[in-house]
Amino acid sequence: MAPALCVNCKTERALIKRPKNHAKLCKVCFITIFEDEVHHTITSSQLFQPGEKVAIGASGGKDSTVLASVLKTLNERHEYGLDLVLLSIDEGIKGYRDDSLETVKRNAVQYDMPLTVVGYDELYGWTMDQVVETIGKKGNCTYCGVFRRQALDRGAKMLGIKHVVTGHNADDVAETVLMNLLRGDLARLSRSTSIVTGDDRSEVKRSKPLKYSYEKEIVLYAHHKKLDYFSTECIYSPEAFRGSARSLIKQLERVRPTAILDIVRSGEDMARLVPGESPSSCACKGNKTSPMVPAEDDIGGCGSQKGRTSGNEMAAMDKQLRENEAHEGLEVDVAMVMSESKNNGAKKHKELPIRSGNGTSKSAPRQVRGNCSRCGYMSSQDICQACILLEGLNKNRAQIQI
Ligand SMILES: [Zn+2]
Ligand SMILES: [Zn+2]
Image 1: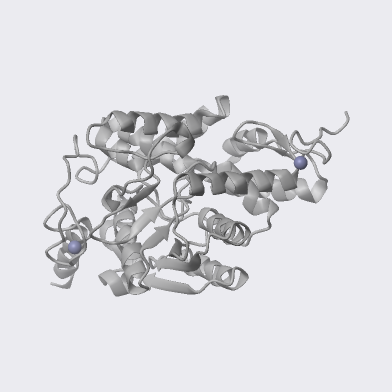
Image 2 (image 1 turned 45 degrees about the vertical axis):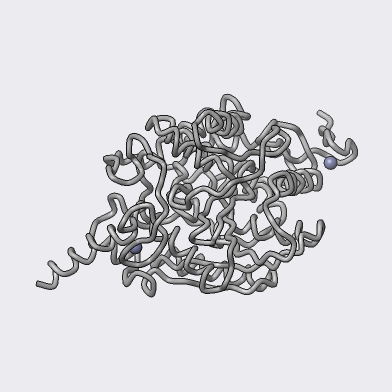
């Protein structure tokens, strides 16, 4: 059978079956199209100002590494005029974060960007290893997520930076939309679809330029651009509800590749129906530009994006890509790779009870801006989530010492 030609340039051999729409593309066209789509997201939502200093929340994982690489490329190609830096959070997880931080350090050299690392221990007096030692593995992802959100903001403030970009992708957004739909929490659903989150008080805005990029395409991009990233999963278990939403999305994607983007778009459409919420979406859908929404409603979970993939699918996909390449330039059928990895992947589905009190409120009332009376961090409550979690941890520590 004659090799298929790229449907875009019609000259090169098609090597990639695009996960988003199954279009067969050559490597160069895939990379260009991926970058063009991110550029479109950035320009249509007027994400950046010329001369803006932007911190990239870098974990060393594929999402934030691709984000750093793409932003560097686009910043040069389209003259955004951005001053890009890397900001990493050290959660204090031995054998995971210390290794991935080494990757970020190499990225800083590769992309010629300054790097700042902020540790949970210095900010909170607790490493995640110590948190898990105290509370067990159950629910630790919640602690990590709450701490990380503040840590990124505080790190940015230390650097005098008002804009942090994160590597959240379309799969992450779809997952959050689905979770909020299943909880019946339309207000939160609406906020989670926004490309920009942040708070005028905190003065640090948060955005996700890869909001419309598929996780699988991020893996393909990283592979074909030969990016240096860390692909070990977080050793601590993800929140069960999030894990289930993620599995469901992956299953839907298998039967209908556009499902992920459809869920994101549906989330944006539903957000438009929520009174008082003004969501953002790509401007070509006829929407206004992004308003700021509270950072506390940002997408939660593991910042490395690794801990949530069921059965280590993405790592399996990456491995398969390498093997394929080692043989010959075979056409990469991602759907096949994924179903294989599903069968081989050890699925560890421990059902954990859903934590109440963290984002599971039946209806999120319109939030009142304020600051935490303990740490001063912006919070809609008298005491912020991080301080509440820390109080519990510190009580535990005190009891152990007695
Ligand atoms: Zn081509
Ligand atoms: Zn606080």
